[in-house]
Length: 387
Ligand code: UD1
Image 1 (cartoon, rainbow, N blue to C red):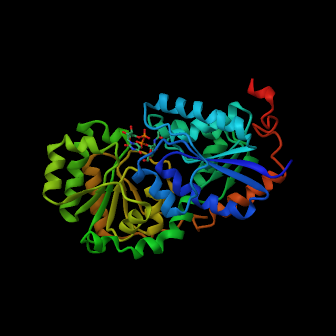
Image 2 (cartoon, rainbow, N blue to C red):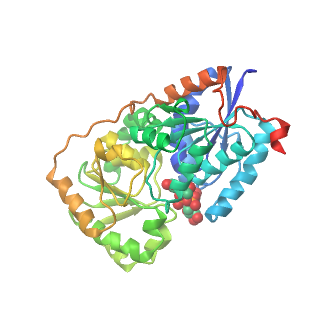
Image 3 (cartoon, protein in one colour):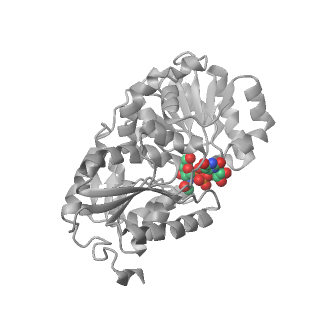
């Protein structure tokens, strides 16, 4: 293997940025062995959804920005593929590394797979078993295309084995999102975000909602707010609003009333440090996010997940998460449970701030001796497989 090994790193949407940051940092001292470049697909492009994370997490500017922007899932995925292919052809990486489960993750894995370039997937193996979630499709297909699969929790190992992925490709490494959380928690807390918002620690909750299944239909969203309003009557809720959700809120007199009463305070999307600082001192988090279920587990903050499934079951079995679904009675029951107290959450295995170090160790070994029989191993981007 000629050195340095070429590794193309991909990010696209907000939850990708905290996952790539520790990997970029761990790779830096090994640049002579693994040369890396960073591609941003531009799936998220607002400063508040993208560049603030680069600044706060010390991620270098991307080497390439594909600038694809928003569109239907098919068109967005196709646009990313079309824009990413020439980048791969031009730089000829040995491996493309993708993180998470967004459309950019699958699109770039698919391009690499078609060009015979190996794929590494960070956060492999998570399954909600709900194929109506766009992320579930992205997860399943990305894992099928991957040569190295880096897993965050035990359930991922079981899922991948059941799907026929060979054991020697699967590595339990822990959670890079938690690497970032632990690295930045003290800085985030020191910002004193609650005080800046006039809030007492433990005297407020945090709400985030952006899943299409929750926010795209006004009737569904208003039904959720029936329960959210009950929680908000106990503790005011701070609601950083995702751009997808914002237009829906304006259309709801019910939600508007809760906002006018001051029980729910709308906020623009927050930076990473501001959001962690806000969450860390909160009494409860209500969310439909994936990553926030993990962050609250490590911060020890009770979390109500307003979904019917989770791909992160360890946050329930060991962490602070309760999967309460979307029925208002169940959400309120979950909140009553939290008020009643109890339970001693544990930190899941390898959620210790060292996941990126483990990943880079494996990448270094792989760069020296690529896995035999791996999906893209024969290709290394010969002209033959480009045709
Ligand atoms: C995407 C991911 C989701 C992740 C979420 C985090 C997929 C399938 N979904 O969902 O897994 O949890 O990111 O935020 O990849 N928009 C802006 N500015 C931006 C980006 C988006 O205004 O910078 C608006 C646009 O109206 C866009 C909408 O948000 O149409 C949705 O964006 P999109 O990237 O399609 O999906 P998300 O809902 O953000």
